Image 1: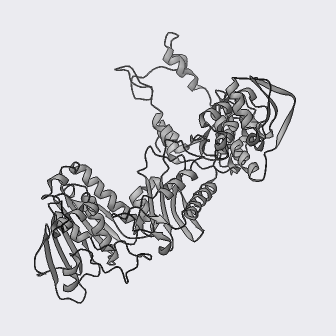
Image 2: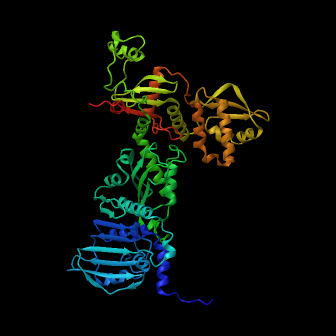
Image 3: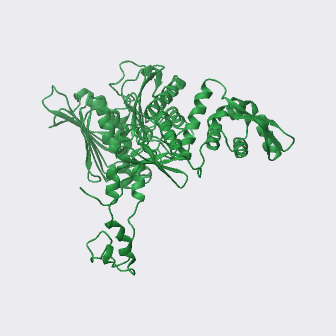
Length: 590
């Protein structure tokens, strides 16, 4: 088949396939144009999920007649001062959006500059252009896109429901609004509830989009490293989510889904969240435009960093520093989850609850021995006993308070000024040991303690071989072992941090990990995982009875240790229930 030149309308439809994937793609291109035009207010209106109508109105600089005519042509742009692509400082620059949209929809494009007495309008209906006509309007630009993909049924059938497409449009506007907090955004239409985000500071916009709940449970990011400026908000580890929908990434004001940034955030949170959980984060990266290539994807959602390692390092450091500053904090949602788990006792049908104004029951001397309910209430007539602490109350300035009791040999009950604090002793001590391990390892091998008599652990020959091969790495962590026959390992020294640890269980657990990782060569990258296993076996076990001074010592150590609000598996180590929460739980009102 001979080569032929494709007709213009087919070229435009092919280009549209790269740029216009769905209604949300159209909204993204049009809103980015409005932002580049210096708009202070942008109104997005949709109908039918965007397939029936998309209308974007802005108060930007507008266009004159010549620019209006050129704007709907392919590869025509005002955003490249020269022919270089190595210093992009605008969101759009390809000059394809309007021509591509006009190839698969009915496009009505109106604009007016500040100097003009009236606006101008041009229409493009599936690549067929009209002449320029006058249009009454204020300064700025109005773009209407009607009947998207009506002439391309193959594309139309791949669109999702109106609700799903409307949600995708909302997500695009949400990301653009976060990247441009100074711009007033309005999202409206027959297919949605109206949204109004006035312009303001970044923190206020993040709260508008992600909710006050996120802002309350996030820490600020502020780091400059390798010429990369990282700002934004990072959610506390215990404020994790089941998916990545609460993760937002921006580079030089552009919303992106970049593997470098995703990997950096995942690495920064690796010690603090479950593998199947996702932290919430709004991450903003500012970098020299010449150091990043945004021209690697038609939709400009992917990019390429010149120094990807430097960017990764800057993001990891920013997140770790922020989480370190948070100290022992856990998210407020932990307490809310606990509160929602409490339920008032269910009463039999027709039986009034004890606190209701039901039939009066005699108490004290007036009760009869056969009335168990009255017998239970008899004690209420006695004078109330004054609470006597186990020891002189600790100073109230301690955030985690003073230990009062131990429940079920695992949970510490403490009280601070206005809250009840419940601590999981094993989870908390596990985090403390883990952080001490990491601190010691940064300055050299972990200190070890020698056993007078080596501990011999019998295990399968394959496991013995893996442990013997990993011995040099394990010695850095304070664990010294030797092969003791074909089916046994002799443990000569263990990390001093572990104290009286379950050595047999520890060695077997490490052997299981080595079998899972399959190669001793990967141990250098698995040190955190090895340390986590050691910390688990060296921490205060569930079921151990603690003295009051031991419980208070654990609380004070938690307050001094970063990240102690969650264990190494991502679970919270403590729950704080305020007095007001408890009163609400019991239905008390003031």
